[in-house]
Image 1 (tube, rainbow, N blue to C red):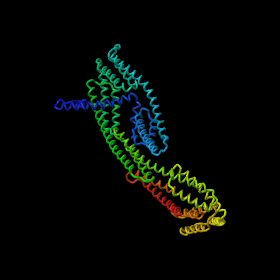
Image 2: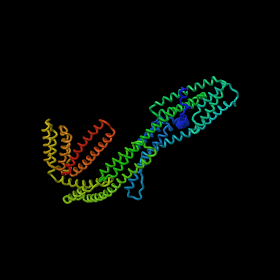
Image 3: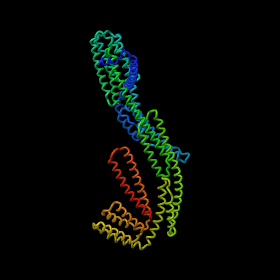
Length: 631
């Protein structure tokens, strides 16, 4: 082993200068690696809870959402020592703050673009920010308490170690009473035992006090000549332990997890320095150089690892630049309507998500990359907000027009001259349909006011007419009698014959004519029987639905039930929008899944089937809508 170490010494031939230069380079690399290990060990010596940080994975926090960052912070604070998570917490806070500031900038831009009140000030409440701050403040409180307790301990431990060094110095300098070699060894071993138990000391004192301690410990061994056999035995034992550490360090060079290998090497350095005594003077430099050489190799492996990580960061930077260009391209597209802008907004949201999940970029490029991204998003929002500002002005004008129609309808709703007033009310309804959208906040309210006024008028009109129409009363009596007969009707089991029989029942029912307004509940009873009969037929879902719908439609038209027709029209319009939005969402989801999956994916197939079902439903609802519009 020692001969192998000596092979690394400079050769006294023509390559001496080259070898010396190489040795100088090795010395620089070794010194850098050793200083880094010493500094890390000094930090962990000050607070041993810091060691646990290596067992907690450092995630790419930039890729997490604000919700995920808050959950991760909450989990770390609840389950780990405060100093073990300090680096993780600061990275989480940095990522959350960036994303939160981005959100606030976006909301402020929207406010400035759309606000018309010069006295209004921007405010935006984000509940998740309060939760994040609360968890972070809990962490800071724990950290402060930990620091306070730690500082009290560090000072006392430092004084103990200083006193132990003084004891060792007095023993080496012979200032104490004459002791036998055996007693001196006992005293040294006692000092070493108390040294190991002395506890943490400030990191800035770590290397100084350890070097001082080992200096006097080595002096003790060098000055003990009287009992060479005992000293050499101790030297031999220490050498064996250090050679074992060198072998363990060699095996770490084969560790696939480079960072894990470096951390374990760091532990070996701590054991070498803190737990094993000196070796014979002739061997000290040899074994230390062998250990240092392995440290250099591990350092080079770690530098290569960092180099690959740097390459990934450069690739991420290229990807993020491409995403920013895509955002700029979307911003420059000409979009003429609301639906188009909603699609653009979804595109930008997808690109934002992609940007955040791309991963880290080189540290020196972080600010520039982030600023370019924010500028691109801000430009898009400015263009979008300008469009909606114009829309808002147009919608305000529409609101004014509809408000005038509401006032007219309210003025006429109690009029008794139905013959003269009804055409006017219908003209008001036609004018209402020609007016475009109003602001979303007023939409439901203005519609309800208008609908209530119209319903009030037409309900009164129908009520008056029904009380005077004996033919309608007779129609009700006929339908009531026929309904009792229909309850006894049973299907024969022949599909065509049964379908024809049901259609005949419908035609017979229609032939009885309109019933009084206050007795239209009989139509519902008839429809309930029809629904039960249609359910028993082996018709498709669409055919069944359309036959039910046509039957109801005929009844509403026959009874001049404009209120029911309008209510159904509003309901179907909402269903069409609902199904269209569901299809859009499913298609958007499947695009995202497809881009991240390879090969056949059963989940994608299931989503595709769901899209087809929704498209069939949409056809049916649009067919119903078309029939209503034809009236």
